[in-house]
Length: 396
Figure 1: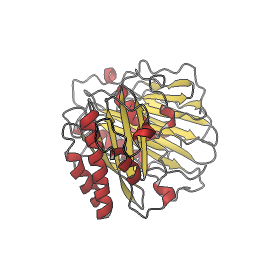
Figure 2 (figure 1 turned 90 degrees about the vertical axis):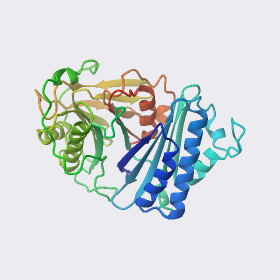
Figure 3 (figure 1 turned 60 degrees about the horizontal axis):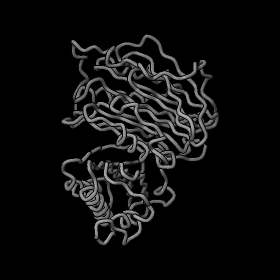
């Protein structure tokens, strides 16, 4: 397996009603993680251009700012999502002088020049998702322009500041050492400092909240073989039950357990997370193992986590069994699927509906995992629940 990039992400901040505040927040974030003054100003300029476009064109626009890092370097990631008119020709819109509102048309052109990476997926008449990443000038070119193999998004229910959904990814080197040369990174979530997980509140029907109806694979899967040789990527998504700080504590506990786990099989990883979540309100959890060298996916899910393996002309649902990680596990099973050429793994909580398909999102598989996750959140995300989605692609 060739070297790959996995990024930790933190300090998630969504801006929806106060888009103008995003510029100052972006500059402060850039300076705090060590970007120099000039680079911080460039980040602020790009965010200003992006929010200006949302104000002019979008029906429901939002901006996400967050820190991305490895063990050695940190940068800033910017994501915009809107339900505006979209762009029929993205390449033309990126050229300076292209404008649909009579302005100088330098916004997207400036973004393309200043960002280390820029990816845009636009659907005319429906909306646009744009992702940009900024590192300090002088960062190794091959690293700065690389796309992470796994990317995820979480968004809190309306009215909450913290999200109970959380995700993480780590590398299983297969005993050969980490080819990226960095410790396994993962998604982290913010929680109240010093707060301890509390017991599940009474009067809640956990079984009803974690029913797994509608998440059945079309074919029975045999028991998988042991972990294959070579490096593999482990991916975890957690949906802490309910929402608010207690759900966020469950999500944080799941991430911490997954990060520290040496488990190589998804079923073993879920068992370790189950032990770590005792004393919390519990969660729905799924863990996937992507093995490029063997061409297979191993998957173990509990509760309302939807798993989908996408191919160019296929969509295979992955099984999640009933239960509550941290409370009730009646039995676990790891299922095996063949990785489709050029495909992607999608995992999402019930903060996204199942009513999406690549048929209504043409070109989705040609974009980065982050933009794909953003487009799924734009298309299927709901505002009355925490939402989480993670996409892995480009690994096989």
